[in-house]
Image (cartoon, rainbow, N blue to C red; front, top):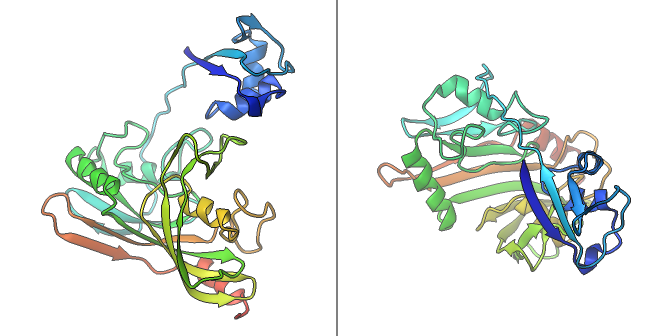
Length: 305
């Protein structure tokens, strides 16, 4: 069992107990919170309550969470688009729709399953059994390049480059609306959304600095094709930042319109360029990938501005 403790603050006053736990505890759904309450594993000020109990400011909420069941990760013979590979690392062009590493609801068919089949035991173990070799990741519905470490030496070196912002990551996206300026920078901290713990947001507290530079490539009626360079690499950074300035990524039903766009399964976002110093000899390497068909097909359907 894992024990957690929460203190209710002003913004959450009046929330139902099951809803409050579902929003505040990462990875816990409202239905799962309800089951914990019914099992007598949740206490409000030391007493058991029902799921409809209303939280009050200052309430001390304690919950006992069952330890997560370990997932076994099996190698799977899934084709990989490998752009570069040597004894220390490989650069992979991930297709749209592929999850990077196993998680609840996605325990197979992931990039990690494919990497285990391709590399065997020669993957960095720094991120544990579930994420071997994964130095950074991109979302399921984001396509493009990411780097994988084959050993801990390479992993530590590459992670340090990301931390010191010397790692080059350039994306292309189609965003909703027409940007006022041809280029600009979004400098706004990102953290967990206080309203939905499954989402990120621009917030001032419990956040980390985040900087995204953008440049217009071409304009269309109702949309803009942009190039985006990451100075930092926060979760959902581009998607959050573009939505924050009023131009969510086209097809992003999490941070933009809830209505899907025809022909797009998720956001129109591609990790096009990746550059780094090789961990072994320090030489700078940079790779790029062509825009995938889903991206170019969407552009062809748009009318010039």
